Length: 247
Image 1: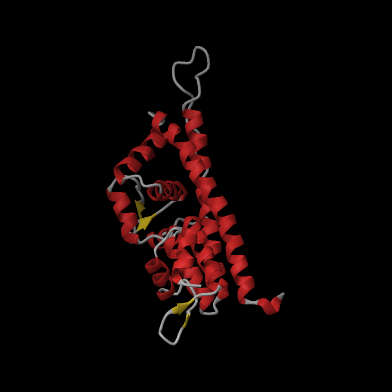
Image 2: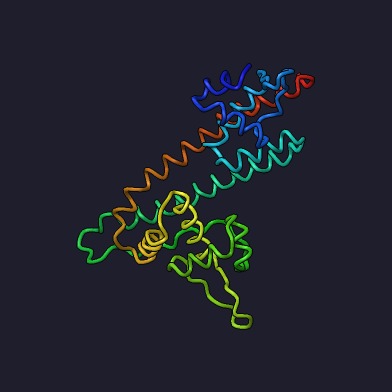
């Protein structure tokens, strides 16, 4: 097979195929005596796997998975996939918490009521009993401490300070807000908008726009979950071709 044969199946350029090989997303191709690349069904399966991994886990993780496979580090590849599934589950839990709060805020007040019932506390994501440091929370979310400080400056987070050391301390409610901010940030929302959403959840006001957006967020998470199923099948096919002796 030629680079154009692989490219045509996916509507990409032949240069993209060569770039993927260069970056380790495809196994090295053999060469003709004149230097032309020779691809096989193994390369076609690798390309299908990589391109299926991208919408499921993102380009960086997809590349890391494939390069780990080609370096013989299968456990590293599987661990990267596990992290993606864990993030999806965490996003679902965060979204469920937001939906519960918004449903409560937008519910019709009982007859004769002069004000909506008090907003119940949102369930926080699982967290250690002790508060988290900025480094621990950054590690949990896979962001940098500088990102958390930027969220604080934008009014998204409001951690207390340890009286003895002056270090930031993140309690479960802060972790919940950080999880929500992380979800919204990956959804493309600006920090100013995220800060507004956090305030809406905290103060029980003006949730119409947030309620309208929840279905879109839910659909994106569903699409990602389905993409993970497709990616698993494509990667499984590729691994089976690489290890025919196991069948």
